[in-house]
Each structure stands twice: as structure tokens, then as C-alpha cells.
Length: 86
Image (cartoon, rainbow, N blue to C red; front, top):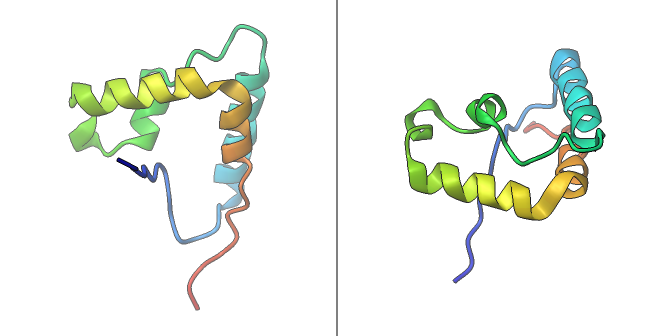
């Protein structure tokens, strides 16, 4: 079975504050010994509040981020968010 999870997606480009926030996340993820997957604060910014108490979803997201590690997080976080509909 193949699954796709779209986290923190939008069809608008990042505003300057959001872009700066992404760069700060990159720096934190790259710091030695700092990245252990999604903590509560970061998870809350990526999931809809209705799903924050769903242990199945929360545990899957946490396991995925721990398994993939900081370099994958940084690479995915660096995807240009410049497209928007006409």
C-alpha cells in the first residue's frame, strides 16, 4: 500500500516571516544532537488541531521524522514555495 501525507502545505508562496521561520528550523535541525523528530510545538504547527490528540497520526509522523532524520527534513523544508494559482 502506498500513502501520501501532505504536511503544512499551501498554494500561496511563503511570506517573509514564514520563509525566515523555515530557515530557523533548518538551523535548529542541523545543530548536532538537536533533531529528534517532531516535538510537540513543531507537530502543532504541522497538524490540524483536531488531529493532535490522534495517537495513531501523531506516532506515525514522529516515527517518520525520526527515521528520515534532519537532512531529509532540511531538504523537504527547502522546497521552493513560489507557486500560486493564476
